[in-house]
Image 1 (spheres, one colour):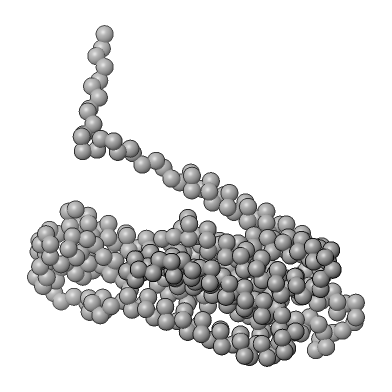
Image 2 (cartoon, helix red, strand yellow):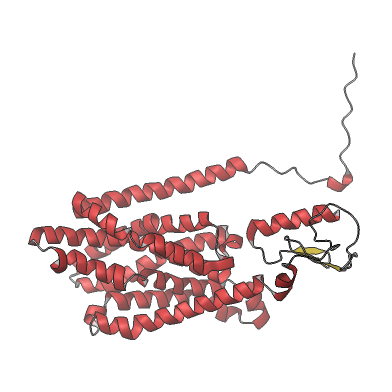
Length: 374
């Protein structure tokens, strides 16, 4: 009888450590579930909007509302700079705003409208009070989900602001389709055309003057939520309770701005509210985001990186070769510093990204560890 082959004993060094499981299948399942849910929400929203506006109004509203979507997404992507989240997260945010958040808002607003009508109150209550709360909470859902499940990829406060802007862009797209389709249907009944049409007036107000309205509200929410989600700053300053109040404060500020926007016809007129409140808040929020972007760029591109971005002199070890000798211009010891190359620097036994962010920085870090024999 043949002896069974001996099984090598497991090294004590790796005892209790399980082999990593393949993550490709589980990730594909999760992506499929998320895409399916968003697609279902999109189909429901499509049916509801088409039922309300009709086929002609839906097509006109769809074409006009799609005009600013691409430029707005590009602007927010550019604003993120080094802190911009991956495009797949931005596409999720856009789909969430246009499909899931829009479906939640439409269902909740319809229920609130029926409840207000049953009580006998005017429609201003639903427009100026109920709708801002429902819509801002629905749009903030994308931020909360990414903060819980993809916090590292969110990119900090600035990355959250970018995600918020893209989410609001998707939400505004669906809302614009609805309002522009209604206006076109009204013009067909009244016979108004071109310069005297309600469709043109709605386009100028919602896409011309109100292009950044929904993004502004949601970015305010993101700034408060992002500032509250910085545990390092809270520990350093010892203001845990005050920091926790920033998230609801940002949401309340967004709801207040949205209510002011919706109630502007009864608060002195739309031009007064637009010029006295919306424009200053927009300029202040844009300045805050640009300041955050400048800080992020300064942290990821330093004079050290700029100096080593120049072509190294002859005989300098750039960190990209495969040799094991020492550099002629820098010391390489167990606790010393090794700089140069495109992958960053090894300082005190750890690899730093050298201005790179995301997976690219980790890739170069692994390459330097392999070249240094770690």
